[in-house]
Length: 122
Length: 111
Image (tube, rainbow over all chains, first blue to last red):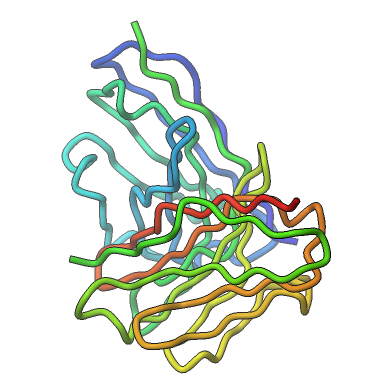
């Protein structure tokens, strides 16, 4: 059974930093693209970032470019999201997801974690 | 620009059927999409991948009551024999090189 467990969320002041982690199990982590998706309170889903199996390709939504960094450790079956220069509009539940691959690129998310809440407020 | 448009809300009676829509933006009418379900206070759950020809691949354990179809730039999710646990938000998702997009979601109420 695929399991994705996020951690690291919490309350942070505007301009601050936070690092999210996602522990993966139940599948061969190193063989899959992974992603982060977020959901602001009462709002819809928003794709945030993708990382290729070996970390050689990374993509971000424009609103987080230059502030967020996605990374992975295949030896630890773990996915990370380093978030810097946080803004109020980054407040959301952040989900880790296992993405499918079509023609060498990420397609849809097939497995999801339960999410971790990040609140950016003074 | 790659955009998915969904109606904000839908409703149908217990035991009835409902058809949700997801419309692809101009120039992207051949894109495949995925449908996801999000029950209250839960994480999303993958339902199916839906191709432009209407063929679809469902996730593990997804009941036969859930089906997909396509017409032009519109992708449909049909839920038959509605049950109370189908009351949820439904999101469509599509992709292109280096970008992935979700629709705004449809809140389904089971009456």
